[in-house]
Image (cartoon, rainbow, N blue to C red):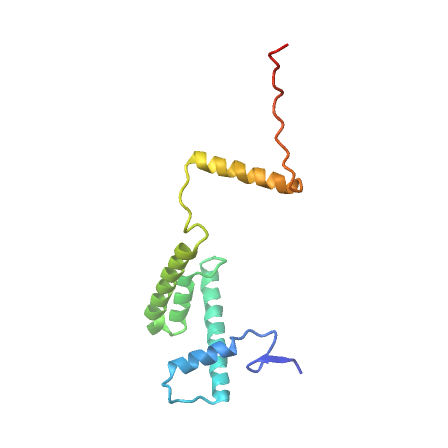
Length: 156
């Protein structure tokens, strides 16, 4: 018998995190409603099967238009083909909301969000400083001056 890991599925099979799914189930129901554990497992299985179904149909839609990457429009078309057309508007709205949130997150917490623009001279000076620091680290902390052209002795 294969080792079981999550909700009666073999480890090789795809599944959803049980704790997260249980939390979602509880959030969707009134606080006074309890759900039996086997019912939670069944709901999780249904969600996995639904995702597999939508993914498979989205892949077929994607292949029909000769694309190699499933795009949101392929998922929306798959919903329509499978008879879930009445969910398309809500799914599209959730997708648009997700795009807005991820865009705001990347702007707010992005790597360059707090960087003040530099002039070209400031950027060049910063680059030269960083190169000098890197050279120093490469030379075990010993700063080796760059080779310069020999000075001409005018006192000869």
